[in-house]
Length: 100
Image (cartoon, rainbow, N blue to C red; front, side):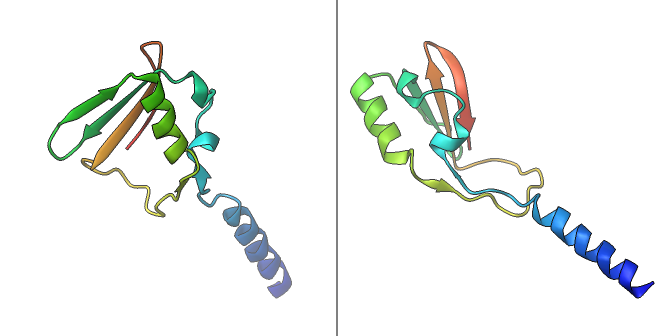
């Protein structure tokens, strides 16, 4: 009986370890091609100030600076109120990605 309980516990640990949150870069999260992004909107969640960037050189430069940053998920994924910053990516006026 102790062996069966031990095996069950081991299997549960193995199953739960496969569901851990994964660290990814923006390129890994984004489903499309970052080179197709034509607009970036940045929203300050504290003040409500919004900045939209459509200049192709600035869009590419910004994405090149952040594309390799590793996003590390917080263990606690409970609902939260508010955010500091939100960034939305657009391709031809269509929102294709959003994070905050």
